[in-house]
Image (cartoon, rainbow, N blue to C red; front, side, top):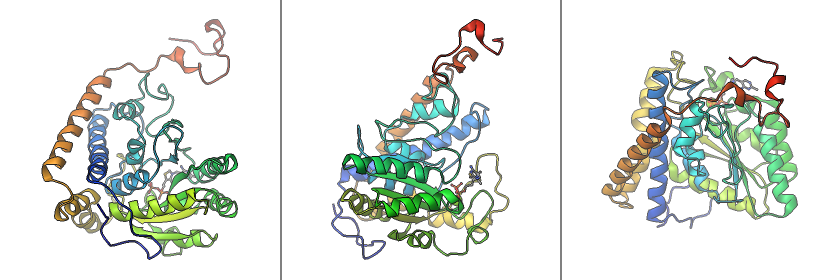
Length: 351
Ligand SMILES: Cc1ncc(C[n+]2csc(CCOP(=O)(O)OP(=O)(O)O)c2C)c(N)n1
Ligand SMILES: [Mg+2]
């Protein structure tokens, strides 16, 4: 099935196709992201989540669509998500139960309770958890893309950066390196209008993040981040181009962070009418569904089946892990140091 004609720039070639099954799979990931986050909010309010809870409400479309443009599977493309890219992680194969365990710091979480939320890796499935320092994943992913290039592997790296994150030095250093070395890297710049409580006009003087990339000789486009089709098509173009050895590409996605920085933040500094407008007129999931139905691309019953399936999956994952144990104090050292000290040599007392 051909994509609708609206494309972000004339440089994006037509002819990208998504089958009805793929369109439904994208809807599954959108719905899963939103439902899983809603479940996490309930668990957070029951004090079962350890640490912060960062929502991607209103941004699910760009996360899912950009990750969906990658080649996924063992030793294929690699992406690095930010805290608001739960959808990207799910597309790459992270399981809801792993996400729930991470957020609740369970002993059997992918990091055995040592790290939280999206800070975990699986390079076989193709994701590399974020280092908390904003901007630092740009040079790290540039390094990974350099390794693909040096080994002659047809693989691509994809990395996300927030509007706030583009003000860091490492963003600029990493992007310049990727440009000069013509690395197979795609950078998604998320213009979601807020960096904690700072709006863009207090953060940088350019209008579009794409201008920053162009300053380093990096081809850059700005797309409607809440249009799943536009983000998918722009990313497919950039990924295919990077795979053909044409170098790094920057895609700015204009979107809106509809929740506070994290659940503890009441977002009192955000104008209410803006929030209402983005929710009512520009929700990425609603827009996607509308497009599928008005274009008669899928049947409404198929979407309902997916809603039901997602609800069951999230319920089952929650039930399976909510009463699992937290890590024991003794388990803190193994895996951190090469040789964990024997129990009688520990510098802390096990209570
Ligand atoms: C170098 C650095 N400075 C400050 C922080 C604290 N911090 C974490 S998230 C955040 C805001 C990020 O805004 P943005 O990059 O726009 O991403 P968004 O939260 O909007 O997704 C800040 C200031 C940090 N993690 N790293
Ligand atoms: Mg931001």
